[in-house]
Length: 444
Image (tube, rainbow, N blue to C red; front, side, top):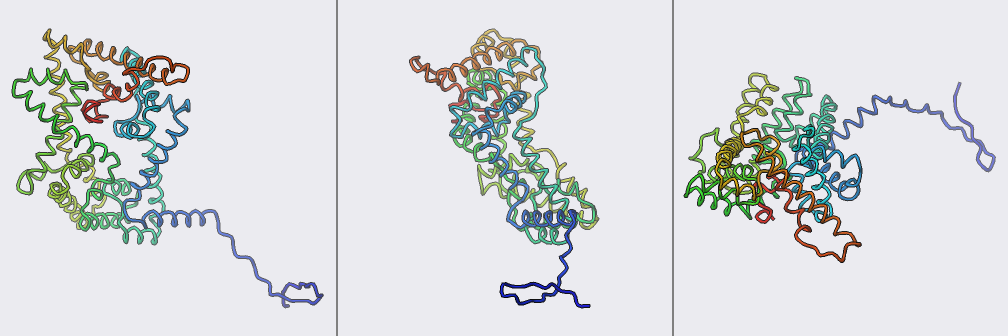
């Protein structure tokens, strides 16, 4: 029997249409697979590392939301106070924004007040930077999206045909993939390192590199020259010079060592340092590229050769995951090691100096160490260090509160002084790394 639909139009004539069964509806699982495939192909179809790109987008969204609205949210305020503000890089980002003059007094006042309470004996459960935590979630979500869709052949083909991910994120992606899919990650990463040989391929994007380099351009020559002149007199002269400088002396020593190491490394060229001397962390590799784009080429070539060699061996031995893990567990950054050693020596030298009455009196009038070093100071002079730091913190909190109070319309008849710029000076007390071991005047 013929099956059909009989319809009558307005004229009364009948039309017989063939019956069509409705298409089968896709299950929720099938729809999820399609969405995953589409999203993953979109992510890897654009140039550059998709995880770095997601991190950058998340950074912009978070900063915009914080500046425009979330800085007044009670939960957000409690969160950044428990972490003593933000990490140095993200604090620099806030300090260079147009909102810094009205936003940062509140942020820094809360962070320094929380630090003063910790220093006075309060609980020292310091959380990580809330913005860094948000960016890690963005990275995790992007890597999870790629990992769930990677069994799809279309996604693997798009990944292999594109640039894939940078080396740090390739390691993380490999950690969630089954072994049968790891060769795609390994071969794509090796090709990207060999063909592009860029800092972004080896170290990912450096969102804060430009801000750090701006400080280096303004201050490095003067800072390193002052150190050389002081050492020409004696170690006493160096600690005396550092005590008289309006920043944390330990952070300053760490920064000087890293800058001097990078400058030495970039000057020596191909015939200079050994291969292991050229291994740098992502942060210092980006710094080196900014300092000398041409001089960094031998460093980048050495690191690329080392990693591609490991990847080649992994392909021949079918140990893909081990090779990627080895890249993450490579030798520690030599610039970081130089900075850490200089910091330990600066702490020791300051302990010795505080036993001298003249230097101890000068330290009592000085900036002193930052909160980051003060909270971990356990030497014989810890009481003196904590006392000076506590006084500086209380004064900074008062000045920041005064700057907010005098910004109100009802106090427009009161004279305004240096407290109105206290927000630009206070970061050196919170963490000397915010201004890269420099004073506010040197950095800004």
